[in-house]
Length: 95
Image: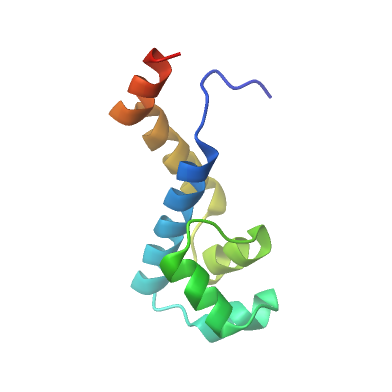
């Protein structure tokens, strides 16, 4: 698969985790249900959703599925938003 633009993976991961955290809170998904399905403990899940910019893929997928979201949609929206952001465009101009 060929990408036409450079993606800031760190910013993308932070945005995706933030969107997932928001969805988990809005749907009132419990850390216990995510923990039971992902084999991580509730405290670790809560800490990574609340304060970190990245998390293990297995934990992220579990949080997304438990909250009823579509992981493909979350990723595609985050990529589109990053591609259209003024910060991303100015980074591209400085090359």
